[in-house]
Length: 371
Ligand code: NPG
Figure: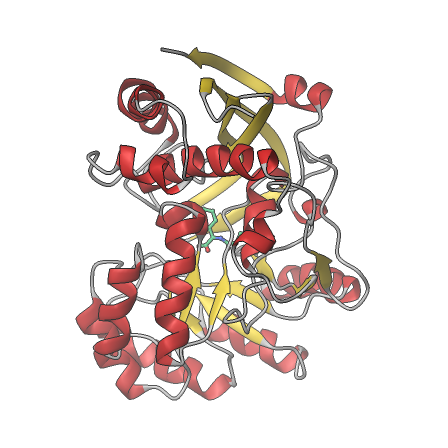
């Protein structure tokens, strides 16, 4: 079987969200994502880019990703000839600085094709040790505590095993206290999405009293030093998300005491290969990790769920069911069972493919890239 890459196709898709997702960055009503398809030998592989339409969560954004892919990343991957080792793809793109979300989508597509040729699943490739994974759910900022509790009640009925509340300055301690009172037995965490500064330490000292599993990314994504100062003042573990772009970042963050938990988002760190490296660094240091999400369609969700089955992933991730976000996913839906677990795909590659009719119905632009 030939490992030669015949070409790539990019698609931007738009899927209406079941309910708007509000964070301190703003509100998303539709999920817009760029998908990468690679045709290689007799198979195709799929990858999803985690970028959003605007560069708020990350420096990358969809139109910029599209350009980085068509102008630089895809031509140089094609130019390199047949892919013997899947790591070759990362090496071919390494000259391009940053652009991790764009690179992750290319790596995912090529890795999917490469594994399909070998009839091997991504889960087994990354050393999965479980067939099903426990799932958490992320709750956007709601208009008031009652609305938040109503939404959460629905998730708990479905079996989710951890609830993450989004907070922002001015909507934090009171809301979380209300949640804690009503949900005494539920593992709760909060996510500040980098919206606070060290001067806001009193907010976190108040949250520290509320028996939270973790406080995620309270401060600026570039500020490991202040995270270390804040962590030293709190009993609750700080979990870093945006600050951890690579295994090198993870090593520094752990060494300086900036976090006690890491949220690995494969789409943010450049893909599955770097995610495994971060997992390994954290595991070595005794730091628990979990797999985050970026409201991915089934294509990106499949990668997240496979990585969630790695041995050092010891906390439920934001690997929610498709129906949490979409009336209809692009792939057959990811579902959770009544005890809040999701099956890890075990078919070749990422184990799922977009449904052709559904894909066509959601596509808003397409571009092919060949040599
Ligand atoms: O379940 O996929 C999911 C979303 C989990 O809350 C979630 N993601 O800050 O972690 C985050 C947040 C996010 C989503 C951030 C989209 C940026 C874009």
